[in-house]
Every structure is written in structure tokens, then in C-alpha cells.
Length: 590
Image 1 (cartoon, rainbow, N blue to C red):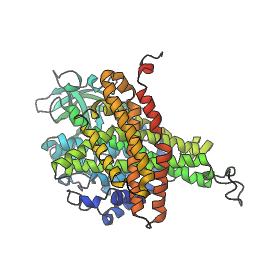
Image 2 (image 1 turned 180 degrees about the vertical axis):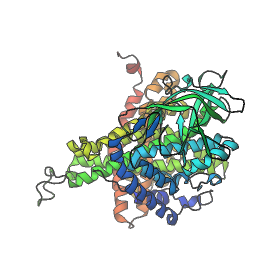
Image 3 (image 1 turned 180 degrees about the horizontal axis):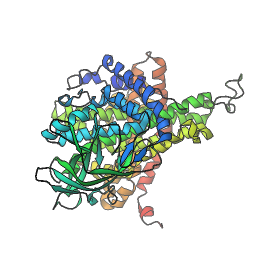
Image 4 (image 1 turned 60 degrees about the horizontal axis):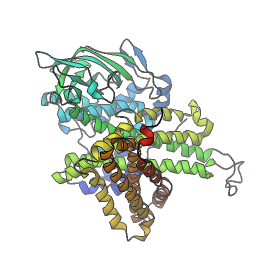
């Protein structure tokens, strides 16, 4: 049986020592972001995830969902767990107080999101998607729509989903055919089919708000003609009570590789009544409000899987006795040594630790910059923060989901044959993690977004949001002897990233296939260097804390060394592949 223990100590370190949230006390919402408040909040979230959500994960995977006449019934215990989740106020954590929210920063919500994803990713999709729906309606909806729908979405009494994909329109949303016909009362009739709709139908909430992309009559072709509509499962009366069932139906659920307790629905809309969100033909702008937040959340899904995979691999490696250490027996009183003494097992475990702790720091930093982009009183600070968010979002989504899948695979490898056996629960993490690399924009699409949109934006303006702070950090620590083992590799590989960036930018103009062909590798190279910057900064904090919580900070320094010496050098092979160009790829025989 797997086990899970929330990494509260690391969250405390990152929020208060690494990000130093107390320096933002003048930013709205941050005044209460103190250790005194956050420690009990983290502990309460951990208790929910460890004691309620986690025990349901393996059971939910085994039981799966029931589909009966358009209705989806979630596994036993899920509905009760969701009720407890909402009663404790978790859906309202970062939402606007005007609609019943607590108004706290997004960076404080990320630990909860990660813990939920580690404990039970199938469960976590529903509140995660609801939060994305809240963001889209809150930012783009009319005052009337917000007043009518947000309070119960914020409370968790209702849930929300986004409905983009159609059988012929996946990544290419310009091919969407779903129709929206105006009604005399100002609403619209929505007709069409959407597929792959996570949590599109379930019995955990009394109403589900569908955010549907559709075309108005005479709309321009492509993405410029798409509008966004709010289509509730049940119509809502003026007094807020539920009215008649809308004319939409879950026509079936997909039978998937993983996430067996999360419904992936085929939704049919047959003249369903909906209301415009935002402006006509501006649906993509409104939807990207939801999708950008969702992409960070999906990255955290990969991180959550990586964390629980690491915890279980580490526990197993400490207990499993196999062979003797090649330098001599470490436990001569036992028939064999635990496998944690073996170099290759330690390589896998440290790779997992370096990924999870580095990725966690990066995810929290992006969440903090999202908060500053929305809340900081100074316009220049808001712009700088948003520049970094725009740059980092495709990197976080792709690197963290690739990493979550890779870490789950490593956990299976550490367990050996037992990792392949369903009873041990480890193979589920491989199956559950796989789809995170696909939905909310495949990781290849994220790479094209980075190379095609983010790099050229404002002649490199987004890039400066990373390169300038990294250069400043190197200058700050260049004369610190204790930091040289971290500063020197960061400086060297930052140079490789700059070299790759220049090649992509110049060669991409001459031959777009070269930029597209190297995009995935460039994205990974960028992520490696971002994490090197993250690890160097964590090392700097650990050195400052010399003598305090020695075991914790020594482990930080040891993991930072491993990252710099054993993972960061992968940038060299990535750079070589990028600069080899695309000729062998585009002209190769297939």
C-alpha cells in the first residue's frame, strides 16, 4: 500500500525563507500571509489530504465510475470527501470576498493544490477546474452573471468546467463548430458536441457550470470567431434556486488509461440555454484566462505525482534488502543491505528529490508572480510580474508534467517487479500522470508557444524577466566562496541557454522548421536552467541558515549539489541537438 505525508516543512521554507512573503505585506491580501497563520492552514490541509483524500485514491482507481442514462456516479466516498472539502472552505481560499471568498493570495493556495494532487489526483480535477471557471467568470463575466453564479461556485456548492474540444477540433480550436443562436431574452441556444470534458457530469455538486466555446451566426472563421458562453446544467431562477434541467446531456464517459475516478465526458448540447461571457468573438481571450491558470495547476498535478512517487520509492528503498553494497556490507547483521546503499538507486532517488523540491519552488514562485501581477499597487511591478508569468507558464506546464511522469516511472523502477504489481499502488501514478502531458495543450504545443510567442514578444521583453534577475543573482554572489559550487555551473549553463535562445531566434527567421524542430528541446533546456537558478537560490538561503535545523538545510545543499553536477549537464546535449537544425527531421524517411 502506498503512503503519503504532506511536505509541510518544505512549504514553510519556501513561503517564508525562500520567497520571503513578509516583504509583500503592503500588497493587498498578503498581510495575513504569516507563519502564524499559514502553519495551521497547512496542517489542516495536510490532515484532509492524508486522512480523507489519500485513502480513497487506490479504491477509486479500482472501483471507477458508473454511467447510467446520462448520469455519472463517482466512487464511494468521493461525494462525502467533496462535501467535507467545501465545508472547510477550501474552494473559497483565494476567491473575491465580494462573492464569499477569503481573498488570500494564489501562492498560498498552491500547497493545498499540490497536496490534493499527491493524495488523489482524480478527486482534485473537479475543484481545480472549478477554480479556473471562477477566474474566467470573475474577470470577463458581466456583473449580473457574477452575482448570479459566483457565490455558489466559490462555496463549492456548484462546480465549473471548460468545454473546448470537439471531435474535429482539439489543439486547433479554430475548427470549432458548436453553434450559438441568439434568443429574444438576450440569452443563446447552444448546439453541438464537446469531447474530453473532465468533470463534465458527476454527482458531487448540485449544479455544473459549463463554459462552452461556440460560434455566433456570421462569426469570422478561425479563432477570431469564437465566443464563450456559460451553460449551466440546471437553469438558475432569479432567487438563486435551481430551475429546470437544461437541454444538455452527458452521452458517455471515456474508458481511460488512468484517472479512473475522474469522469471524462462526451457532452451534447441540444439548444441548451447559455449566456455570453465577455464580448462576442472574444471567447479565446476569456478562455485563456481559465487555461493559463489551468496550465499552472496541471504543472502542479505533475509535481504532486512526483512527490508521492518519491516518498514511496524512498520508503521502499530503505526497507527492501537486496545484495551487499559494493564497498562492503553496511548492515552485516542482516542477510543483505537495503537497496538505498546502491549507487543507481541513490541516483534515481536524488533525481526525484531534486525534481520535486526544485519544481515546487518554481511553481510557488510563478503563483506569487501571478498575485503580484494582479495585486501590486505599482503598475511597473504588475507588468514585470506578468512578463515572468507569461514566460514561465508553458515551461512549468511542460517540465513539471514531463517530470511527474518520469518520476512515477523511476518509482516503479526502484520498486522493481513490485512496482509493476497493481496491489502496491505505484503503477497507478504512471497511468494517472500520463495525461497531464497531453491536456490543457500538449507539451509540444507549450514549446511552440514558448518559441513562437513568448521569445519574440516585445523584442525579448519576457526573456528579460528571467535573465536580468539571474544575472543580478550571479553578480551578488560572485565573490562568495561558499556559493561557487552553485554559481559557476549556473553561470555556465545560463550562457548555454542564451546561446540556444540566439540560435532559435535567428535561425527561426531563416527557417521556421529549425525553431519548431528544436522547440521541445529548447523548452527543456530553459527549464533545466530555471531550476538551476532556483536551486542556487535555495542553496544561498540554506547557507544563511547555517546552524539552524541542520539536517533540513544540509539536505538542501546536498540536493542542490546533485542537481548542478548530475542533472544540469543535460543542457549540453540539448544544445547540440537544437543547433543541429531540422533537416534530418523534416527530410527523413517516414
